[in-house]
Length: 413
Ligand code: HGY
Ligand code: MN
Ligand code: MN
Image (cartoon, rainbow, N blue to C red):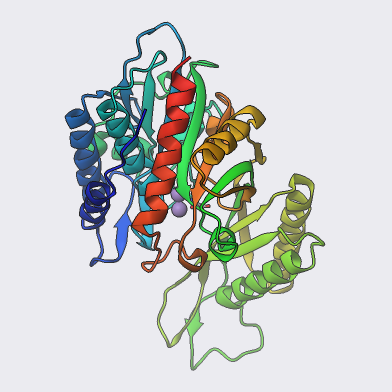
């Protein structure tokens, strides 16, 4: 069976989707249920219909596009990723796994392939944490990792809750209907850019993911005392920004002395109020992203950061509200699936290697639902979450080809 991937059409679709953005192209920003996210969803659903896939959406806006197999009783084979994008992002993160999966199914259909098991594309709601500070909202609910009540209580920076955004997004139904029954899918395989430099550096075409790092997020609200920048002398100041700055530096010191080279910590959000040059900052708001491939080491660093934050705030007489937004375990990918993809690469004479994903993905939570793994393609200097994120058409074509051959193998039985 010769599978012909139409990479020119796929590249055009990636380029078209990248123009649906809240920013000025080539910068991509598409936050959960924003106007651009809704337009992006409409664009992708139109492509799915044109391929003849059966569409449905769940109560949190996860989109399912299914190619019915000959034997509907068998659990489907799933693939997918996300199309939402953080501020100032690129056009490949998530998108390659969604549009690439549509192209893989088109190519399989055009080759005359008929799946025994249905093949289902899942486009996950809010893989990025931008709206509520918590990533993988859709896949957490699918995997039963996030209690629906907790999801309903999430609020964005303006205090708007998930229900407000679901209504805007047209997502209907009860959140507790989202969770997937165990093994409703036989397998889940996500195609994604590596978001790291290894494949490009080693000139390898495909990465097969064996483990996905363990992410956690801390949210800190620091309350000091404001005042006139000229009239408030230094002794006795309670400057919230300076406490936040010490905490951000403590994060760097803790993760670089954790004893594990895989510990990474980022104070990715740091906002102050009132934000006037001649006013002592009375409030600081920080979100800290902490990860490691090793759970024990990650949690040891998490505890050290919390201890340091409390010590710094107590010394500076700053009020501290500290919240753990998420503290997820790593995911171990399915060894049989990893071997299947490795066999596909061998048969297709495409170089591959096994690896860890340092970024998290919806696969982290789909691994709670069914056997899961990921197919990585190289990206330019490992850049991601920035407008110059790039994978070449040749690299994307190889990834989609391996995905198509893998879906055929998994759904043919
Ligand atoms: O942050 C991550 O690892 C993912 O790209 N959202
Ligand atoms: Mn991302
Ligand atoms: Mn992603």
